[in-house]
Length: 346
Image (cartoon, rainbow, N blue to C red):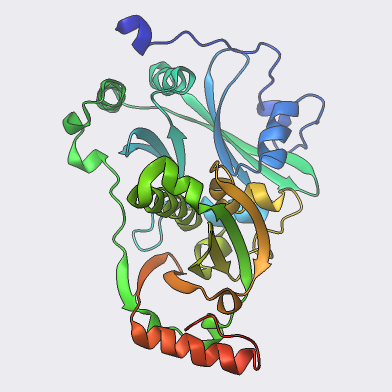
């Protein structure tokens, strides 16, 4: 068990790390190609990395130096939690109880490399956290600091990892578990016409295949879990405008296909020069990984005959309650918006 629990990590000795001499300087692309790949091509705002010496490092990537200043006003700390079957290392940069800001690194303990990195981070005398800014296609090393963990933190987290590894999650303390945040329920009728008439981006799935593979209930559960993953990323995103955004998620069935439509499409929100939209948009990042995914397309939920079922506003997720009056209102709004066209709400 001990050999399996403590996997052997294989660092790449060619990897370079930011150091004191690079602080305040632009990192050369030919010297730090993997950092550019992770921060720009993969669009990751935070990540853990095994450096050339076999040490685990943490990285936070900001869209500008000003954003770094705004989002790191307090003493930085790392708190370990579990979420479902994974370990979270939450890097807290703002400790304001009303508006805390944390960046949740995820370690899948079932994967040997990620388990090894989590354990290595606990065993190191200290773990370096590097702050970078990505502007105009260049990475700037802003600052680095060392984070250490107490003996009690190390032991507690190691036991959490062992519990996740063995599947004995009941042994994990309640205060170390991240629970699903409560979803409030509001009537869909409470949404204004301006919201209901918004257009956005549709994610199309071959739903009949999904049902065949997982069953009707399993297919619904899979889609809802995937949507919630995207919402969780939005809630904890590094950029405040993402966390404070507002959008609605709709569903429409068309024969063997199902469309999840997000309005508005969020393209402007994620139109950042150093990120491709599909990598940066959490909905695209998660939904496109499902095997039954077919395509994305611009869409009007009203024209598709869709119904809204989730609403997100400034960090709060609402479940939308549907009834016959909602269908009547959507029908009336469709007739008003698309006069003379066949009405899908019948």
